Length: 88
Image (cartoon, rainbow, N blue to C red; front, side):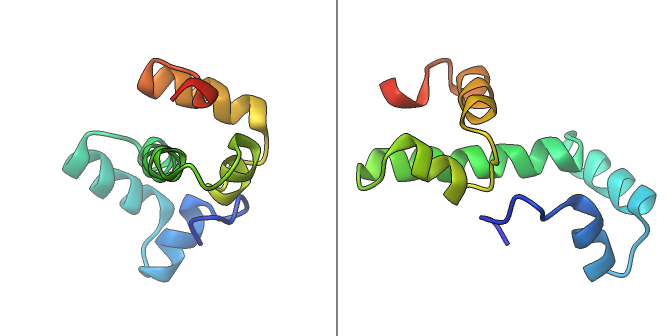
């Protein structure tokens, strides 16, 4: 479900038979990131890996990584890695 922009934290919590709040506390306590921040970070790491391969264009990687907006993807990518995806 990595590429699915509709995939949310509630879906993960449900699959683990946990409430959203319990899941949030477990993740926050374990990795010191909110579940949403962690999911975004993992999606950005995967996007960076795909950019390094050079097989796809930035907008393709945006959608492959589960982002629904190229501008939001670029904003998050720049915040995380300090550079725009096209310059990565």
